Length: 68
Image 1 (spheres, rainbow, N blue to C red):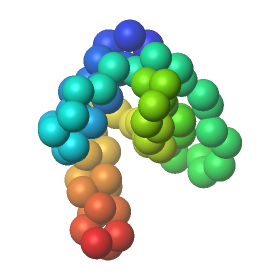
Image 2: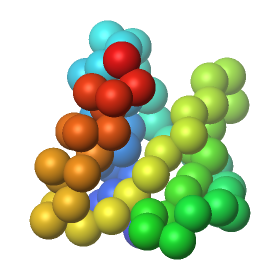
Image 3: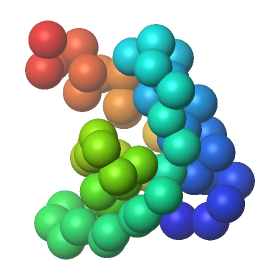
């Protein structure tokens, strides 16, 4: 996960939680073949993150809706 994506992930987590978050560690998580999967942490909180190109945003929105 490059620095640009780490910043976008940090901002998205802040937007969703209202709590400042800066990615300190990134661990690749295996599984699935469509997205890149990561565990990101700031030392006190961790999140599972799926990454793909912006062209797949609708796919993620559909998945979020299904999980709710």
